[in-house]
Each structure stands twice: as C-alpha cells, then as structure tokens.
Length: 72
Image (tube, rainbow, N blue to C red; front, side, top):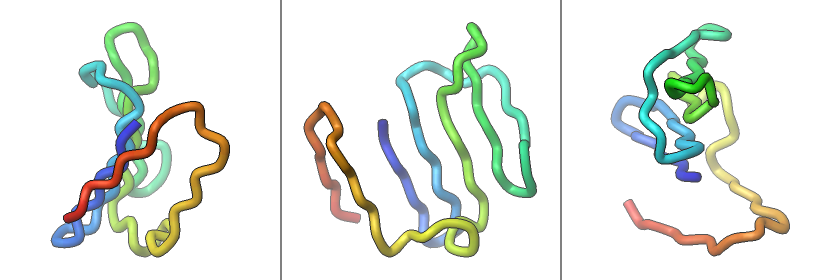
C-alpha cells in the first residue's frame, strides 16, 4: 500500500494494490474509489485532502510488513 500526497494540488491517493484501475466511482464530494477489472478496490483518491483528512500525523499499528519512508 502506498500513500501519495501532492501538496501543489492537494490530492491524497491511497494505492491499495499494484492492479490497474478500470473503473472509478465518486462516493462523496471529491472522494473517488478505483476498482480493477475484477471489481476489487485498488485505490482511493481524495481531492482537497488537507480539508478532509488529518495529514500532519500518520500512525501505523501492528502492520505485518516493512515500513518505508520516501522524503519529498
């Protein structure tokens, strides 16, 4: 899973898998779910993210994987 934030345009994209999105559904104003060809959720796009989510803090708890940080 990858979280990608673009401060110049303010969207947050949560990439849940490496599968390609073939369908998108807006479930709320500026919140779009992306699905692959099998109907699996592969990503979440949040427009105007700084107004919708708390970007200042990220807490990861008991994830069964390595955590990698990439500096912007």
